[in-house]
Image (tube, rainbow, N blue to C red; front, side, top):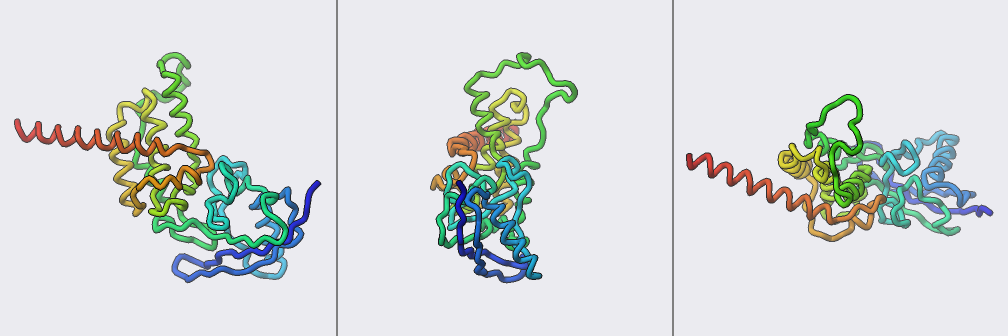
Amino acid sequence: MSKKLNLTLHVWRQKGPTVAGDFVKYAANGIDDHMSFLEMLDVVNEGLIGKGDDPIAFDHDCREGICGSCGVMINGVAHGPRKATTACQLHMRVFHDGDEIWIEPWRAAAFPVIKDLVVNRGALDRIVQAGGYVSVRSGSAPDANSIAVSKNDADLAMDAAQCIGCGACVAACPNASASLFTSAKISHLSLLPQGGPEREDRVRRMVLQHDAELFGSCTQHGECEAACPKQISINFIARMNGDFIKTALTANSSLKSREGQ
């Protein structure tokens, strides 16, 4: 049986990237505890629109925890208090009648605010774009057993491929690092034979692009792993760092060899 909640929301409102923002207080009354967090915001927005006020802007798309579009800080926690859950899959039953909820956007230099709770996460797209391509034949799908892949590598690659690019790792990290995101995108290709030919160039380009986007460096706080709705392990960061060091050493050795000729 559902319950009705009366809540007080403190929502970050900001009209644009060059305009100062602030928290605005709203009453969210009669909220069904079966609603998702985004459905609750829909109800609040319907009330605002009915009064002729500007609705709260927030990102959303699939609302099934798949696309990675949603993402807000809820009481200081990326995606809210429930572990391994996106904001769109967070249900209001985790809150209690009379609660005060603080809602704000991701905070990072690389994620400039567009409006209210919406930030520009294009930096993550540019990191992926820097990775280039994989040298595989396009066309019909190859036979599943044509390229042997060990179960351990296949499982690890699938774990990394679960990253939905929501940016929670960046928002949770005290350094605003995107190392977990970058390492997941690198690892899910480098672990498979198809990603082998571009492995060295890929890790170099993507790590350099990460730094160029003004993300911070990883200092192993582990907040990224704790906030990730797909529970991606920080072990992928260690794998990425190892690959990057190997690439740098290989490039340095090649340079010395050419200079010696």
